[in-house]
Amino acid sequence: MAEYIKKAPSQKAEDMTAVEETARRMLADIKENGDAAVARYASELDKWQGGEFRVTEDQIAAAEAWLPETFKEDFEFCHRQITQFAQRQLETLTEFECETEPGILLGQKQIPVSNVGCYIPGGKYPLVAAASMSVGVARAAGVEHIIGCAPPRDGKEMYAPTLYALHKAGADEIYALGGIQAMAAMAYGCVGMRAVDLITGPGNAYVAEAKRQLYGTVGIDLLAGPTEILIIADDTADPELVATDLLGQAEHGPDSPAWLVTTSRRVAEAALTHVEAQLKTLPTKEVAGPAWRDHGEIAVVSDIDEAIRLSDEYAPEHLELMTGSDDEYLSRLKNYGSLFVGEEATVAYGDKGIGTNHTLPTSGASRYTGGLWVGKFIKTVTYQRLKPAASRAIAPVLARQCEVEGMLAHGITCDVRFARYEGANE
Image 1 (cartoon, one colour):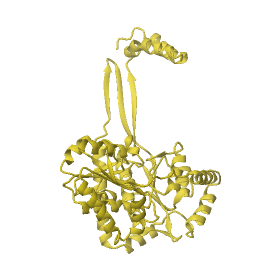
Image 2 (cartoon, one colour):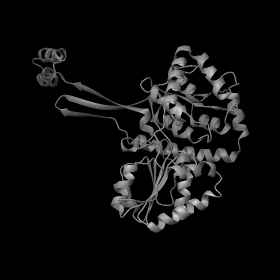
Image 3 (cartoon, rainbow, N blue to C red):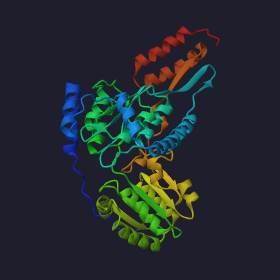
């Protein structure tokens, strides 16, 4: 059993009723009243004063001219890493046709989604890298048309680095629009947008709830809650570095969990001391401090088996390994969104552009899903084709299956083919 050096206080389940009702009301309003409702919410919630929501070529050019060359070069490096990795993922998706029985041909095709909407949050931290993680990966997948949305700042314009990133990542249209109104506009086709088939992107609780309610009208990438980090460490780990990485994720928000599972009591106690010391001077201590106080945990376990069991139970979004047995952990761990192997790797690399995607499952969802990847923008579909003799040969078998299920009209479609192809040789 794990021994907790620090245990998060019990948390009451958050009452999401108000968020759910707000999202439901706004989505219904926008579905019924379209552009007028979108404009009203943009004005009320984002103090929008800019007139047209679609960003013009002149605005894109102005942002590009204003931004320093260092930012552009850094963005290009990160974008290249992300899209190259997406391209390698794409190469693992194959089409094929096989003959399972004589004359029965079954196949698989990979078809990109036609229209995608990519949302880039712009609250406390405008996640500029999300443009490459979504738009860039969608472009690598072969999506035909991509809309980028991000909220305006100060009611006027999109954050210039975000605008530049959306443009360079390959968005066909860019809109200065945020929150629930952005989700609804993309889903329903408002303010000049064509309605999309799939929406991606993180956001606050209202954005996440809007995505949840829109699922079915459109596809979504996943439902993401507060970001998480879990570090597995043993006696070889540097406790100061462990503390640094725990706080690196805690700064996301006061509800962001940071967990340490270690086989070393010395590392556990030292890491706790370092966290408390670093918080005194951390630039974002006003956010990271409450997150660590309310959601931070440190557990000491007896061995690798117990560390793996507990980590898989947490099923964290981000999982870092700082051990002398990283390869064994890599081969055995099952539940995580993205894995960072060895102290040389860090969540920040993944978040900002080393190549792996930062849109990842939270709240235990890594038990059943991975994160956003090039395959999310592609439909794997199947087909069948049969030669006449093969159709006649299998018709009685499938007709009997239909009869067992009581689906007699289905069975008739098999029976007519049995009669139709009598005498067929191939």
